[in-house]
Length: 248
Image (cartoon, rainbow, N blue to C red; front, side, top):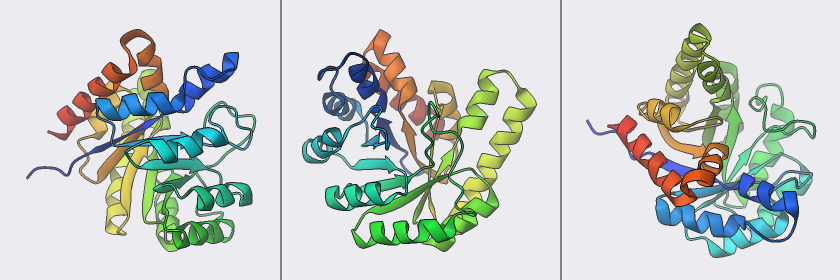
């Protein structure tokens, strides 16, 4: 039986990181988003951080206005970000943990331990017609909490698995992989749509594409890095091909 189509969301945060390193308007994450879509991306992801270290408010407004595919706004569950999301009305909002001192999002959201704080944010976003996703580890308690909160989607944090593979820690990588497989299955049993992302490259994307419970991958930093040598369009096409191989 054929597996369901696997969507590719391209995260353009680090196009903005390069722009901000020098200032000005180049390279433009909105232009990069359009190139990614032309090359086969099914949607665009952008994380508007509280410190605006890469994506800025104007980037989000322009992405919403100018791209022809769904916009997934990654955000912390703060009053400021909820206001921005409700005003902008992206297709989706993925709630993530955020600390000022981190280089990138470290670990998943503690949905199980923060249900009281997260429930109002999920409710406000849903009332605005925004599809809510929670970026969590593939742990039963977190998955069950996401279902209890009424978030229709989870995104499984794949960073620990990818890091273990890259560092040749085979036993840990296998353990993390089994956790992802079991978590994706449990999430589907709870009626949740399952996405995955963080640290994925061509090989790991091809591997995880074989999990039929996963219907979307969100990939950013790796593709922006590959774009330096092969061009963003070519990098997206190569990722799309890797995902299709894994799906088959």
